[in-house]
Every structure is written in C-alpha cells, then in structure tokens.
Length: 593
Image (cartoon, rainbow, N blue to C red; front, side, top):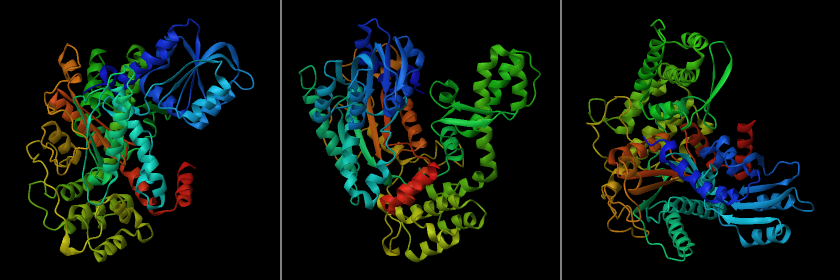
C-alpha cells in the first residue's frame, strides 16, 4: 500500500507548503511565528510535525483567533483561509499597534478583492509577502482527501437548505480545483448521469469551468493542456448499500463499532489508566493492517508480539494485554515497538468483542440482502425471510434500521403498506425519517409493486471471495476498474470535457513526467483517476482506491468527498434532512453537549 510517508497526498501537500511558504521564509535568518486558523491547523497537522517546522526556523505556532502577546522583534507567517473573519483578525494584529515586525501572508485559496483591499488599506506597510497557494482541501491519507465540510451534506440534500446548495457546490468546486492544481493535473471531467439528481452534473460543469479559468491564468503565461488524468463525480445515492453494511476490514470495522473521534482511539490499559492512540499514517503498523480482514489482523498481531517475546527469550504462551504490560516493564528498549502492537491488539480485541456479541449473526443476513445471493451462490428469492430473524432478535434499534434499509435497497423500493409494517416492527414510528429521508438522495424507498426498478449488473467477483461474511464489494470499485480499463459507458458517464484519447488508465504515462526510477516511481508518474463522491465516502470505498491502485500499478486512484462517513454519522445526517434549520441546530447542540 502507498504509505503517506512515501509519496502520498500528505507528502505532496507538505512539499507544496515548503516550496512556497518555507522557501520565502528561508531568505531571512530570523526565527518566526506561524499563525494558523482552524482549517490550516488541521491541514498542517495532516502533513507535518512540529519538529519539521522547528527545522525551518519556526519556533511558535499560534491560533489566529486567540489573543496573543506582541513579539515585536519577530516576523509572523499567516497561513489562513481567505474569509472575512481571518482578514479581520490579521488587521487587528497591526491596527492600531503592530504585534510583529512584519507579516508574510499566505491564503489557502483565491482571496476576494474586497478582503484583499481591506487588508492592504490597514496593513500594507507591514506585509512583506502575500500569496495564494491553492490548497483548500484536506489530505486525509496517501490516496484520500476531503473538503473538511460535513455540513455540505445538509446544504446539498436538505429540502430546507436549497438556498445554500449553489454556494456549497461552488465551494466544493473551488476545493477540487486546488486539489488538481496541487497534483499538477488538468483532468478530463465525467459525471454519473441520474434522471432524478443533477448535483453531479452541476458540480462537473462548475469544476470544468473553474479548471479552464485556473489554467488560463497560469503563472507561466502558457495555457496548460489536459493531462493524463480523469475526474469522475458521483452522488452518494449511487451506492446506498456500502455505507450501511457492517464491514469486517480493520479500519472500517473499528470506525463503525468503536467511538473513534478525530482519529483518536481511547482505551483503558490493564492497570485502569486512560490511554489514547492516534490512528494515522505515522503508525506503519496501522498502514499495514488497516485494509486487512479482521480475521487476518487478529491472527497477525499476536504473531508479531510472539516474535518480539521470542527475541527477548520471553516464555511463550497466550498473548494477552497483561502479559505485554509485564514485558514492557522488563524491556524499556522495546517499549515503542510493543506499544504500537499493544494498541492494535487492544483495538482488534475490542472489534472482535463486538463481532462475537452481535455483528457476526447480523453479517450473514446483511450480506445475503446486499449481494442478492446466499453463501452457496443461490439467489435470495424472498428477502423478507432473510430480514425477519434480524427483526425478531434483540439487536439495537440502529442495527435493525440498517437491516431494514438493506432489505428496501435490495428490492429498489417497497410499498407504503410494507414500509409501515417494518417501521412498526422496529418500533421507530416517531423516527421514520431514518428510512424515508433517503428519497432526498434519489434512492427509491417507496415504489408501487408493479414498477420495481432493475438494478445495474455487477462484476462477477465469486472467484475473489475469501470470507463468507464479506462478499459485498463497494459499487465504486467496479467504476474504478471500468474507468481504468476504459470500459465506462459514455451514456451513463457523460464527458463534461474530453480527456486525451491516450488516457486508458492502464498504461498511459504523462509526457510531462521525467524518468522512471523504480516500480513505485512508475506508478506515481502514471495516469491518475480522481473520484469525488458528493455526500461523503466510506472507509470501504477508500480501501477500494488502494486495492485498484495496487492491482493496476501504473494508475493511481485518488478518492475524496466533503467528508468521511460512518454508518452512524450518515444515519444521523439522513434523519435530520427533513428538519428545518433551527431544529437541526438544536440536534447538533445536543450531540455536542
């Protein structure tokens, strides 16, 4: 898998920041202060460490919005989004009295003239540099980005927020343009055609127009031609199944079943102490394990620990958390290595606890409903017979809602009468929005029995299946493979703009690229397929991007969205779609309390 530390998006973004902000600042020997807003704080955290900044003569990192002591002998670097709030905070630092010797100002994106002129009016004599560096997306992983905007879901899909939809799509388009600019790509743009929903088409038009404008005004003065890249835009309703299923690969399972906030896993050690671990690409064990099935993870981690204990002549035996604690006390030099493995042993144990309690029994029914076939490859003739045992078992209401949704998706909609019975069964008469509001995403929920829609055919993966409880493959993986093999139907995936005919995703290499030093290099310098899902992506879809890249080698697949979903967060978002803005506000407030 491509690790962030090698050549992922995080690395590309950090290089871009170094080539602009840091290079400018190197010209002066003075130590500097870096001032960030919430977005740029997250952006920098995703691609560098404090030690990286220290080595570039940045001693202090401050919050733009907090009150700060003046340091008149130091120069300040402002890295911020071009919003009125940020510019006002910058002006306040120099009016009436300056807090710093000078200001180097870097905006993540295009700064509107009004804000720029305002800043010039009050701070012109202190500003040494003012640049727009075109990074307004968040590099989440080596091949995953977000626009760091979970609220986009409500703005685009809620019938009460139609006034915000256009502005939200405009912002997402701007962010996608900065992604392409950072990757130095000018892709051909395609979108998934849908008779009910037009957001993908609208976004494709916006991105294509903004890309044309961006490359028209390139710094070099030359008009840039299309590169060997393709951007596909699709809506969340295109595959409602993947976000609802219980996934059994490590990363997706952990984020579904365990309360992991801001990628931080909190757990108790055997002595009762509260501990926490960050699940990101600095943890190479996480990178190695995150896309593996939980069965493999549970097998591999104890083996790794046994290898360490064997090296240190520890008595063999069952590997448990308490044994590890003993070993760590005896071997300080092995502490870091063991801590990493202890975290994952604990996390895998937590996942398996949930699995054996509830999820294992649920998974068979879910897989049968999603795939439409049972374990033996026989067609599921009566989905209700598959669903009924789930409804009769004392599972949580959330799990039952997920099963009911999979039943409805399997039929491409059900009758009003049938839906009422299901809602009574699950006892959610007052929370039926969990199910009904999927219609806002263009997903059929209620249909008359005579017009059940046909489902599009899927790739045959029966030869690939290894685990009976993980037979479903996200639909986006089919799309990635079809795109790479140049098999996407132009009637279903119209071109908003043509990309070069040579783009075939399997071997096309951009002529702009230099020599190929290694196999990894070759993949990096090959063509790129960028997928953007309106309304959130799942961890299983993220995994698909790595799997297809790994299989194809010469084409890198990058996937992104406004945000990353878990089944719980998506259902909560779906539920409030029918609420007015004030009601949504109070629900958000409650969840933050």
